[in-house]
Length: 324
Image (cartoon, rainbow, N blue to C red; front, side, top):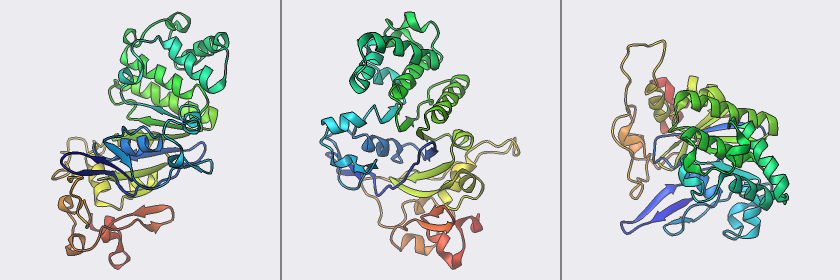
């Protein structure tokens, strides 16, 4: 659980989120802006700025150890962050150091985590840039981030993130600001990395098309909670939570060309004043009295590997999709 303490009150940004990922697996984490996707990943990496952010509970288990028990910025955490768990951020211009060359930043990763000599790290940096498709890599090591385009900066971020062959790679809205062609190239690059290194990949996105193409399993987040998770086919072809169904209705379909998209009614809830009942019920088209009277539902298995947190899924053994 992660919260932000402000003058107005406490914002519960991540509230009881639980998920798992295995070697060589690609998992999608989807939801509207403000649902807690990015904060959940920053919490795992211990990158939430404190203050105002505080991790107040839970565990982040990796290789049998709880990352949340490590001293903040201590040697144990530094040995994991960047080397074993790496992150590709949404905006590379704020992630890369603007006053250091690309070559220096790549070499620093290799020297710090792998103990490489400067000359070897220099050669490895060239190879990494070549793998991510940066042209004339040898000569570009002396360039600064502002001398690269947005797509090229993101390629550099991928090179840095994969430089130490991490066990887990987190792509946090990594392709949001890029054109469609560059998005595809980077996503293919990330998928190739998963295959080549047997790395686990978490794709944080609001683009369900990306999830459909690349992920094996999907977690749907709303108001700081996981409201549904399952395989990509279960989520996209047989959604059980009304929020998931509404997200899918916002996606253009070839089979329904010319049809109007249906936006989700209302706005996301105030995370400082979350109700004890289902937080999606004010926006839900299928809500019943139980939804606004009973406590917020917990995740429940509706079919093998498919879980949903919805009172409607419990009604007479039925599923939320039955009322769609």
